[in-house]
Image 1 (cartoon, helix red, strand yellow):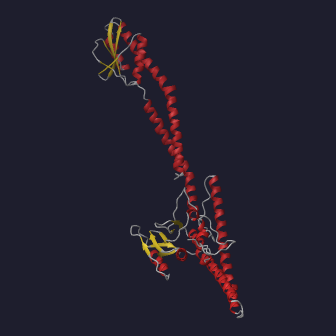
Image 2 (image 1 turned 30 degrees about the vertical axis):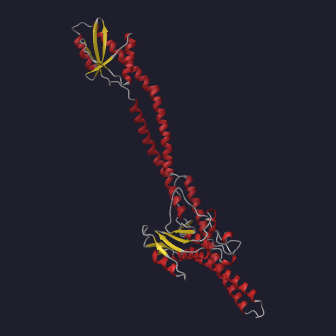
Image 3 (image 1 turned 120 degrees about the horizontal axis):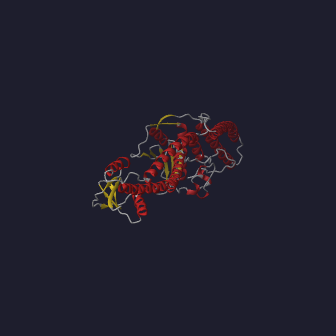
Length: 449
């Protein structure tokens, strides 16, 4: 599953800022911290040696004043009375540098001692053995804290900056994705605001233009279909009347074929008119369970209807009742025609129309919603049908924001699922295939199992 644009951009910027911080820390350590630390350790060693030399050269009466001056000004303690102290662990890198610089200046190995929270150095200078103490953390280097500060503040700055920038971009994109997901071709769509960066303004303007053109196209198409279908009823009626007025010596089989063709044409016209009315129907509050029960009870054959106790269905839903009735009627009729053991189940806002027929292969589960599509291996030309059953189901579901899919129930057969509550998934928008209502080729039995 793909992440949002905000999360992915922040992650990219975070990784890049981490790399920049690591490079900055390494550069600071190599070219700034370590040279300063070496110079500081060298200055510290020089001060210690110089203090010992000065103490030896001073008259005994002046030495106490010098010791006081060193303590107050430089935090150094000089003691002419050495004590037995433990060897210092030298956990701090700075102390190791000081020890190395002292060894260089004194010309002999140096061992640092610790005691009284100070680091001590034994120095033999001018026949005197002195102990000089200094603070272990007085000039210690802290590369870890430097890294934490650089990384922490840098990450915070990058995150806040990217959050501000990306939100300015993602908010219009999120709004556009929601409008695209909810757009069903109706004329009452809410246009996207045309503001923001030039690219987003161009995107919003083009989407609004496209939506208006699609809405006008669908409206004109529906009006044209409804008008043509309505006007065709008159010549069909004249043809039926002409058949009734034919002489008795006309071949009855010929008359029967004409009547069967007229019935097929009349069924096709009726489906088209019902579709035209269904796509323009307004939504209203409908009690879902009683509504489905009424649709199921309208059939002569007993069709079981059940609800799932663990998945409660809403008492009412805002939907188009005529369109939903046409969807359920087409699905139930199709299941009766091409399957057996038909039953209807309601799971929350999902209506399942299940039959235990031969089922539909996976590769045809989207094609069956195309008009006049037939599965030759499971069709017979005597089963009838206009070929628009499932195509009308798909068109009505798209027009009203519902979802329809085909699943395989346990035990075989077909489970057509209609989700009445529209599902919006920003960033991963699923688009149903566009289904034209009118084709240029007509076959019988276009309603698949």
